[in-house]
Image (cartoon, rainbow, N blue to C red; front, side, top):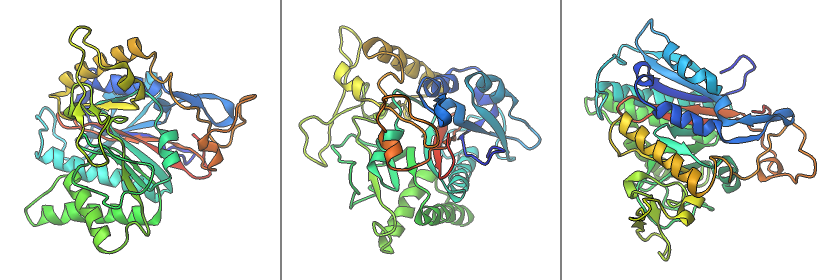
Amino acid sequence: MRKDGSVGLSSQHFEHAFEGNDLWHTFLQSLRNITFVGAGGRQDHLAAHLLAAVLTLPNNTAASCSRHSAALGAHCAAVRSPMFTPHDAYGYMTLPSFALSFAKILTLANVLSAGADVLFLDCDQVLFKNPLPYLLERDMDVQLTGGGCFAREDDKPDPGFPSNDINIGFVYLRAVPMAIRAMTDWLHIVVHRARRGSPTMDQPAFHIMFEDLLADGLMPKYITGTILRSELFPQYCNGPCGCNTKGKKLGQKGNAERRDKASGMCRTEAVRNWYNFHVPCSGDLNKKAQILVDFVAMYDKAIGPVGSRSDPMHVVGGPLPPSQPPPAAVTKGRALAGLASEGAAGADSAGSWSRRSRLGL
């Protein structure tokens, strides 16, 4: 949290993860390229509101993160634990990856309890358009990406939320009281299972947590949720170019989007609609970085620069530019504040955005 009380983008990485690959830079550069009208009418961008929480050993610093992030406007802070040992593989279900689960949940709980909404982003993805107007327009408390390719509606609460088909690498949470209760339940599940010798990762525990809220009759009365459309928030796991649900009925499984054999490009119609592209199941950090760099180049060639197709967004608290009608983010009366992110070397890395009432970005 900054000295002025605003909450910014926050990201978690193991300290040595900033060396030797372009994953962090590619993620951060995509945020830098998404601009909007900030408080007071100034030009602003998403990366300026990123706080990278660096997972490192006791007595270590976030110096490497700062060297790699300051030029793009992001800030870094150390999160210290003896679990975050250097030079390990940090593979799935290792001790550092379990420690990351605790750190992720605590990060989200801290931001929500400060009165800020959170958009959490794994950083093994790039953003092509500003997702905030889209998310705010949906006016729901929990919005996240699915794990599979299915035809979905995301403009009203999902009565079956959440299904097993989720991916918490892109999660929007509003700071409603039940969301804060949900974070404490989520943390309890992870801690309780670890203590009894059957630890679970954050994503399975997330599903269990919302199942408990449903069983207790708390959803959708006190908290609403939906899974975002697969074709707008695609993942590499679903196909080389994400997911195609054209012609599918609600709930039906879609098809993998393939690259054109001659050009090596994804369909322009599909690419134009992307808000992001996430690569959670595509190898190590260097491989992920290579894929994302390729996607950015393809988007630039087929559509234009990252951020060029974003919907207008103006932060409450500053004057509107001349002759510009108020966009949705203003007419809903919400004050936007910042972003937060979280991640891990060898596993997932992450980021998130937050909106704090009464404070501007």
